[in-house]
Length: 353
Image (cartoon, rainbow, N blue to C red; front, side):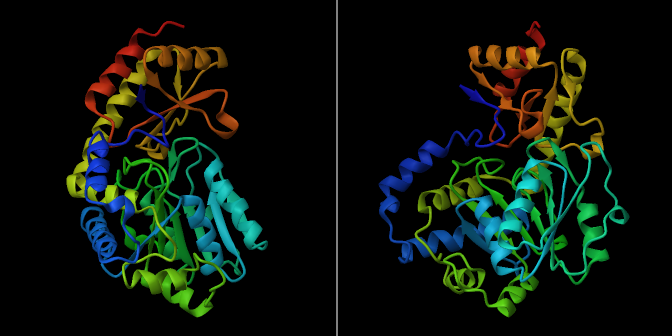
């Protein structure tokens, strides 16, 4: 079965070989305080910084999921309130989760095809951190990095945190624009689910040190203390860290990966625009994600597309949230191969309503 599901999504075809390597090297039983693990952890973080161009003074942490990153941010970087700007289900979920930990958190929602400007939003004075979703997986929208930079300039005293779950490792990100970035590995990293990467600026780490929140195993001050030794505060997903290392060793610089995805994106947009029986859910090209492409149609057409594609050995992504019944999503992630794209393209061209 070929998967175009936008997460968990297709893993790189080399992953089974990497798993076998890990088994043969005894890494599946490696102690997470051992020198073997420290070597893997340090090398993986070095590769992430090199290949994704993460600033050297930013710290990289391993967590269980993007959801855990929500918790870490609210616990360790916010004493009273955060402010969440979103236009989709995952940005909203982050806001709702933050409210559970910090009831004074506030949110601002904007429309699917709305061009957001900084003057449209007034961030509350008590907010210490502004939360943005760079790539909204639920509806295939994305905000520009220029907007992230504009928010940072307008609110220089507030931390900026960015959900890059469906763009990190697929899109060239300017990490200097924000203080916190995070992403799960089951999307553009092309790995099995069960781990996320959390990236923090010196300013974020200084804020965590001032707050001194240390009530949890994933308190950022404790996480930093352990990562200074290339270790984690808990028994981590050693296998996935090793797989991340092997994948990053094999991947080119992020700009090269982005060029490939942008070329594929333009091909998808051209093809989908010619089909007639579906529409692109996001009308403005500037607002579209380059890694998650949602389609809309009548429910009967969506149901038939889903069923027929499965019969053809292809898994398309279901719609999500309020668009669940009226949309499908196509992942445009690096691990997807050209022959798989060709197969889906041919299926869509031959599909009959």
